[in-house]
Amino acid sequence: MDPVAQFSPSYAEARGKFVAAARARHLAVEAHVLPDRHGTDGEVLATDVALLGPPEAEAMLVLTSATHGIEGHCGSGAQIGLLRDDGFVRAVEEARIAVLLVHAVNPHGFSHGRRVNEDNVDLN
Image 1 (tube, rainbow, N blue to C red):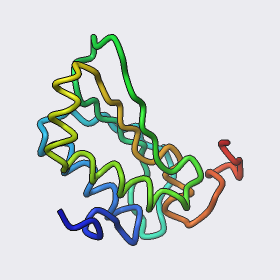
Image 2: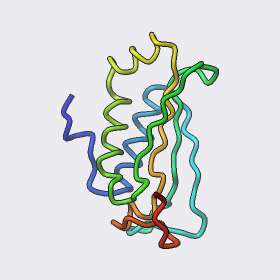
Image 3: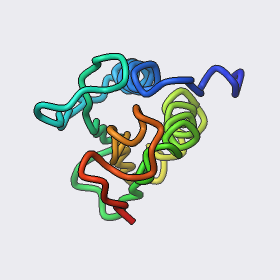
């Protein structure tokens, strides 16, 4: 797998890659859209959530990206890489755990290249 291909120069591209990678694994993607807000290119802003593994698993690993929006490029790439990694997915299945991937906790900051959200709040 080419590690560079997992990363994106924009929020919109990163979101598209995340959703596509999750759907390629036949995972449902739940989108939590920011109402009345748009990204730098007019795109919809959303925090997307996908669950890998059984919802009733006794253990769950939660992986988030973009709490500080601008850092989303790195975290998103890591999440996409994990979804595309057959060995990781196999290990999750064999361990009978679940992995909750929360893509773009702060989509506004991710898109606009800011650390803060749409209300100028640092979510950390």
